[in-house]
Length: 161
Image (cartoon, rainbow, N blue to C red; front, side):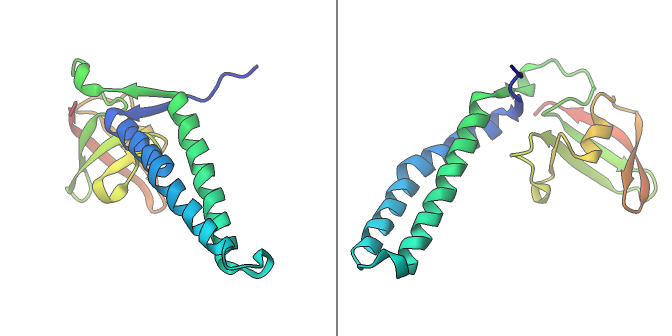
């Protein structure tokens, strides 16, 4: 028997998934059920586009519910605010970096795959930059392989926020 995959999550990531699951079960299920019932009332289901669209939505929504439930049942919630700061990059930390070539600064928070959102500088722990950073410490220089070549960053600060 294989060990289930463990999904690391931040406290905020777990809450967001639980909130999404609650909405899917309490709001979306009822909305889709009502759409199916209304489409059924229109008669012949074989040529009823609204019915087929609603059934497809229902299938996708139920698949998402199962996916979230599986992840939540196998998640490991990591609250870095409860850990003693050591200056080492670990899951959940916020890292300030200096690009050594361009001298541009960037800040990333290392989160789980479901939480990753580059628009708000949250990167997946499985991304190339996160993999390069994990385990390193403030002051270290890390090379990150990008499509344009290796980019070197200095880790300026590691925060537990």
